[in-house]
Amino acid sequence: MCAGGGYLVLRNGIAFHGDRRKSRPDGAMPAAGKADERGQRMDATELKAMQAPLKQAYRDDASQALITLRAKGSIDDQSVACKVETGRALAIAGLHPATGGSGLELCSGDMLLEALVACAGVTLKAVATALEFKLGAATVEAEGDLDFRGTLGVAKDAPVGFRAIRLNFKLDTDEPQERIDSLLKLTERYCVVFQTIRQKPELTVSARR
Image 1 (cartoon, rainbow, N blue to C red):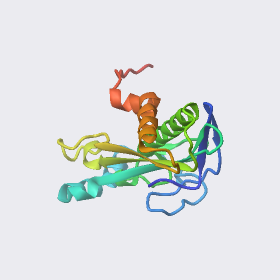
Image 2 (image 1 turned 90 degrees about the vertical axis):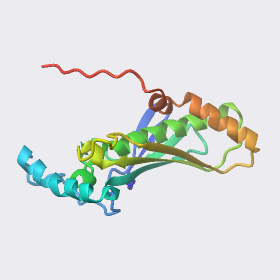
Image 3 (image 1 turned 135 degrees about the horizontal axis):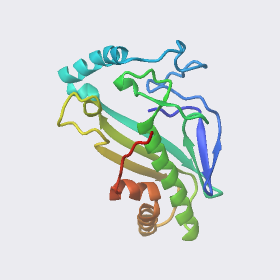
Image 4 (image 1 turned 180 degrees about the vertical axis):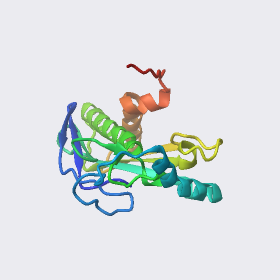
């Protein structure tokens, strides 16, 4: 949904950046320049005014709050690398348009899916190389379903995080299904981001001053 012309290539643990422009969720490219041309801070009144019509719309029709985010990457057919469509070198995250954002900043939900795509793509390529799996062109895509009523506090029964995440690979290969199943099983087992999401690690929150 936020995939644009920019990309990030992960190669042996090192990130290489390409074109930085970021597309908006509606497919339109943002104009070059600062995200906030006013150069002003947003106060509580402005934030409330900006989100009020969205919250009311979600109360009236819960289906409007259901959005699927997507991230996609292309697995390198030569080296252990995965090219992921992403944002700029300086990652400025902001509100998703569904919560009142302009669409000019990166969406942290997209960034999470992009991390999953990058990790899964690199892991699959590494596993394929180790297994001498005959793999041609390959792509990986992650989709995540969000109910924005949760993060906006509109409905207490709506989850704040992703309700579901789907990871899909498209593989150009003549390998038998048993080998494909083994490739996916090992990729799932050794993908750090996938396992982090699945295992729900212990999380702590603190603040310093």
